[in-house]
Length: 235
Ligand code: C5P
Image (cartoon, rainbow, N blue to C red; front, top):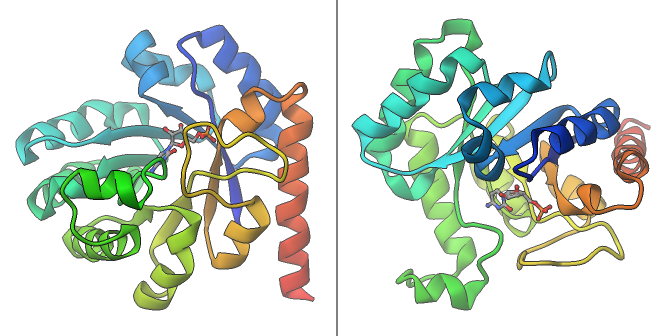
């Protein structure tokens, strides 16, 4: 069944805790990103207590530096950790070797392919010749071959990736917009149902939860949508 990850993007630890309390019953994981982490420091991730934490740090540097960064966050025991696939094979392999030092507590290493905020034109402007789908596929193969456990991609690439890489790699999909919610800065979006049907393992949802009048109800509605889909698949 496709799981729900709540992205709690804020600099305010009390706000993050309050949101976590509201949405956690409906989510499999809490995602903390650069905004929270840089404002509050490494130890702040422990605020989430027993809840599984996805550290979305999108690491992208030379292999030695990324390996050091991975080692620095291992004591926090993140369930998932992101790095940019565009950092290249050696960087991803170095991150994997560093993460392996945690043994059974190794975080799931996710390689970000093409940011969901980039459309074809914006991607082209960065110097990439092909469109988002081609670039996602190229980076996906590179990252998985180098030791990543899974990928972050838009829902528009999930079906293509599943067909190419099989069921094992974890596919995590941001850019999720329930019917009627604002697009914001996201470009390659889909609804929770569409993304789950395409084959995503996890959906990342931020502002549709955190700006909702009732974040708990918004999370519960998406969780119910995903549970209903899963029930249809079993039936
Ligand atoms: O608020 P919204 O639902 O757009 O939040 C999406 C979250 O997913 C943000 O925390 C963002 O950093 C993250 N993300 C993304 N696109 C990626 C990788 C992560 O939007 N490719």
